[in-house]
Amino acid sequence: MTKPLRQPANFRRTAERPSVFGTMPAVGGVALLVGLVLPWLVSSALFFTLMTQAVISAILALSVGFLIRQNGVVSFGQAAFYGLAAYTIAIAVKFQAMPVEAAILLALAGPTAFAFLLGLVIVRSPGIAFSMLTLAVGQAFYEVLYKWRELANGDDGLAIRLPRQLFGVATSTFQRPSSMFVVCWIALVAATALLHWIANGHFGRLTVAIRENEERARFVGYGTIVPRAGIYAVSAFLAALAGVLIALYNGFVSPDLLHWNLSGSALIMAIIGGARVLWGPALGALVFFFFKNVASNYTEHWPAMIGLSLIAVTVLLPTGLGGALLAMAERRSRLARG
View 1: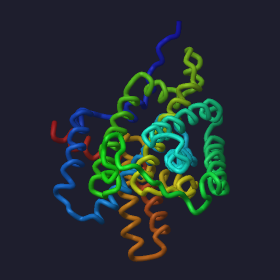
View 2 (view 1 turned 120 degrees about the horizontal axis):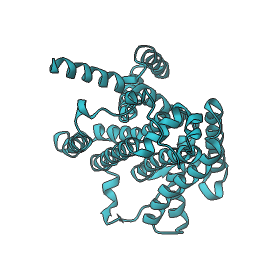
View 3 (view 1 turned 90 degrees about the vertical axis):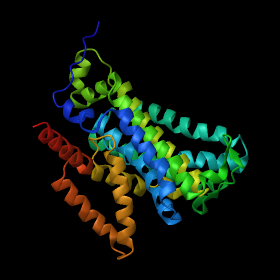
View 4 (view 1 turned 30 degrees about the horizontal axis):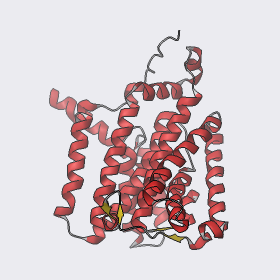
């Protein structure tokens, strides 16, 4: 009979603090309401074009941040699951092998299952070795889809001809910026709620304890490989969800969706927002995306500005923007209580 694993001393700093922002259902309800109301308040198609892309990037960043938060490792291959999900839909449409609805479900389940099986192997590798393995796997998929023209049309990419309806909803809903923003926003809120539920349950607490001291977790009788692989699979599911959304929105896929540059961008978003707070990477993605678009209007050297901003956040705000906001809210809450 195994003994219960004690919660690590610093877990309280990692877990969410509902006392500051309220309960998760209330916060999620407010966030959902904001997304539903915004199209009624703003009429700019350009604004929603940018916001839709930013929210999809936020879901991808959540996948990276959750892996860092729960397993304490960095993945440079999240774009593989993102791109594989998008290509699953495109290839299914190209060869008409299955209904698009079934292809979408496969695009979510396939990368998740593959990540779990892969995770059973690579989570045994610590730190940099894990990161390099994820990079290698991601680039392998990129090379396959880049060079296999008969299947994926190489670097020319694939156009996706979708039917008039998907799951009973008009396909135009997924390709109009304002309506697709609402779909993506709902997906982002649901994904954050899912991560909150996982992180604050027994499974999430166990993985944090394993992250803090894997040897001790094994000593008291817990297996550590399967829980860590499970977290890797959850992060892959989120990346695949983002890939499905971008495929439906653009109606086009290319090998760039699997390149490590995209994984690197998602990691930067997670660092800027802060992975310690569940919603931090999503905040970082929104800030990163709009900062990049504003900076690129003024200079072609905008990547240098992103790099300087990343250095500033890393040095001045080690917990990211999300952690800084949480600390400010807690400070104000303590002052208000006297």
